[in-house]
Amino acid sequence: MSDRAVLHVKGRVLVGPEEVRDEVWVIDGRISYDRPAGAADVRTVEGWALPGLVDAHCHVGLDQHGAVPADVAEKQALTDREAGTLLVRDAGSPSDTRWIDDREDLPKIIRAGRHIARTRRYIRNYAWEVEPEDLVAYVAQEARRGDGWVKLVGDWIDRDLGDLSACWPRGAVEAAIAEAHRLGARVTAHCFAEDSLRDLVEAGIDCVEHATGLTDDTIPLFAERGVAIVPTLVNIATFPALADGGEARYPRWSAHMRRLHERRYDTVRNAYDAGIPVFVGTDAGGALAHGLAGAEVAELVTAGIPPVEALAATTWAARRWLGRPGLEEGAPADLVVYEQDPRADVRVLTAPRRVVLRGRVVG
Image (cartoon, rainbow, N blue to C red; front, side):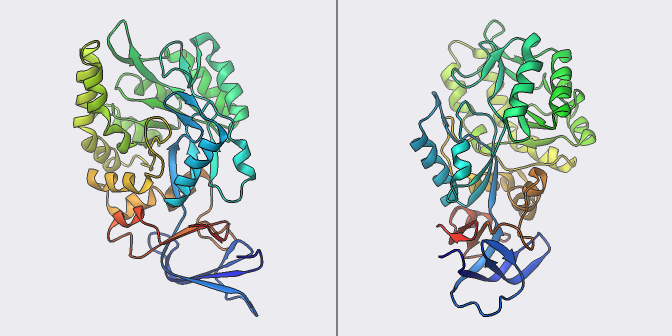
């Protein structure tokens, strides 16, 4: 389709959870609800249209061993695109993926810079590994390099303890989060277990990834402070296999991981019921495949989140949270079209009929 071609999407356009229109026009790559006059080249797509999906925890440019070459990162981004994910919050990566910004055919990425972890307390080749006295400096560095986010590793296995434990003392995270906020960045943290959460939230953190350690004691605190969670349930499904692999050496950690897995759905539903903002993220790019945002939405529904709210967690609400437009007049035309109403069955998200990125049909 040429730059001047017009795309006509008709059927049901889900502008918001309650706002449904019969059609939308894409003119010069942007959304319009006014029929263009005298358009000579019009392509029509029919179905149920949503804003491009959001994966708010995804690692383009990363695999289980660390940074990957550009051609592999490109395949990862294309896999997400073909699945309808057109906006990614890259929640930590050692790769420089800014070249993707120049590619009109690849999803937009909001970067959190490189993970910041405690020395020898995270996956090898992923993070800057530092001690508490250097945390503020590294947070400032990544706040300047990222796109408005910084990613901490809040807990990890302590080999001496044989279990998950918090990585940072309270004072260090307070100073680091304050510095990130001073520089205009929000802060999120990887957290599996329970004992890092209160310090991080009371220190002013904006989001927690995974959040499997939420309990009746900390859920009200998250709700009161408005701290979002990205549960990554498709990744939490791997906990039993991880636990089996570590059983011989770290039985206490293995048992802990199994408990976190067993209560995962209750944890997410209790968080949602308390009013904690919940968003879709897959944790793709480590050991997990890309293109799983639709599967994560289905997992949220399994956990007990109403289907429309689970949809919002990857569309309208997620875009608003990340400061990106949806299907508003004049916005870039990033949308996905489905055969059936995704509000009736979110599983249709795994099979887009058409993918439209910046006004061009790309899938």
